[in-house]
Amino acid sequence: MGEFKLKDKTILIFADEHWGEMLLSKHHYAINLAKMGNTVYFINPPENHSKKVSITTSKITPYLHIIDSGIWNIQRFRFHSNIIFKLLIKLNLKRIKNSIKRHIDIVWNFGLIGYCDYSSYKNSLKIAHPVDFVPLANQYTVKGADIMFSVANEILTELKEYKIPSYFINHSVNENLIETVSTKYKTTNKKNRLKTGYVGNLLRADIDHEIIIDLIKSNPDVDFIFIGNYTSSNIGGHLSKDTNTFIHQLKTLENAILKGVLTQTDLHLEISTMDIFLICYNKERDNCKGTNYHKIMEYIATGKVIISNHVSTYKDSNLLEMCNSNHKMKELFSTVKNDISLYNSKDNQKKRIKFAKENTYTRNIIKIESIISKSISC
Image 1 (tube, rainbow, N blue to C red):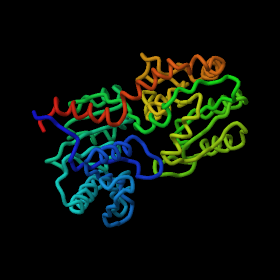
Image 2 (image 1 turned 90 degrees about the vertical axis):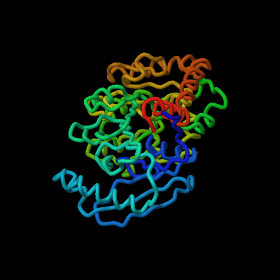
Image 3 (image 1 turned 135 degrees about the vertical axis):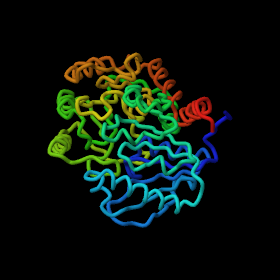
Image 4 (image 1 turned 60 degrees about the vertical axis):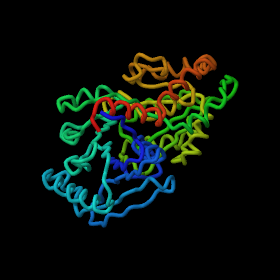
């Protein structure tokens, strides 16, 4: 087994979310792998109509390319005929391979739906990387992977019957975020008006709307800053009756501020001004089932206190202030607010930032390199 390096490789990254303004972990992996000297192709989900394969080079780095494609009615067959759907996926992947015209070293699949078919890449290293629980009907999508990583041990346990070498790799954070927000430790003055930040897709159906609205109404002396999409975006979300009511309520509350989608630079600058961060999902509806969330590592990187529903990955740490029941969140918020100087002390901020530095994308990619070197003959 030789030493394996994620450098000078041609990598395909599959995801269920398109490339766009909102960036999730799969998008950040694509960017960071490209910046490390790999040629990366991010494969957008196929459109539901006939479309030639097109390859667009990203403005972020010339080593990152976005691939668009489409097959007539493919999304309809996904729901009504899995056999035809799989055949169409194979056909589409063949078209993509012919367009790339180079050997694929690694196929890295973050998707849960089935847009990637490992059997189409027999001479490539195949990585499964689910960051949410895979629905039972779609668990076949990990079959054929050489190795699997996930941000939650519970997800790996649910897929153990496939006997794929499996490893926990936590969510990651970009180094430039840490550089932006942690150049100095800003203690919180209780005399100033506090700012609570929430970053993410506000159209997610698993957000605990009732608890968040109650927190805002109960704390008129605190500004609640919401960063992320509240209309349709590349990462999905549906404006249902409940989400529409939630967005309307946020717009009518004086101490709730909707910032919308920000560029990465503006996002980093904005969250560096926060005193508190909020995570509030209803675990009964949550795709992650309270195991782990991408936004946590970004919050931790600021050094500021995080108030959250229970998150199992962090149950044995003191990095989050968690409540076992969301109905206790108002009480927890009050406790933190009234002693904010302690929760955001210099020592507590250092502890959080140190943990984030241990989980940058660069660090975690190096961990993945090491695991692959020890586990697979490349």
